[in-house]
Image (cartoon, rainbow, N blue to C red; front, side, top):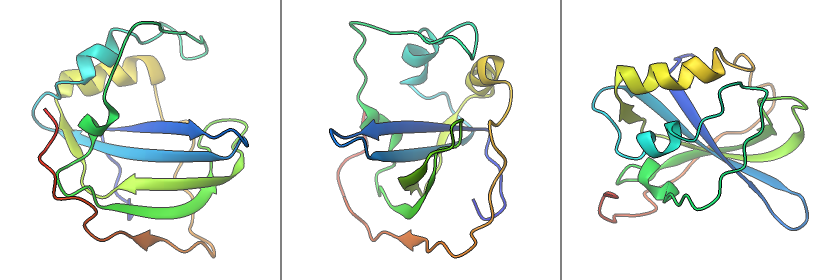
Length: 138
């Protein structure tokens, strides 16, 4: 974001009945361990090219959102092949913290960014107002 790279980013990808895509991007920076990550890391495939279907594991994705839940919005594309266009992106403004060990567990599977940062070109990036003053997820 703004030329800064973060330790890890999680993309929560949604597809509606019409096949339209939206992605919520959550940036992660070194800090305290994040409570939700062990549940996810336990489910990681051993190979990035391996698809793994998980049953009976429930996570609350709002645990990735900060209390303020502000975000940037723009229209772009997927970051992995086929890099489909027409994706509505919502990137959370405030990064969450993860431990160095948790970041290493992510990169052990993903190895590197699938796609480098892209220039804005003519895209417009919108910034949300405070959309929630709810308590932080536990």
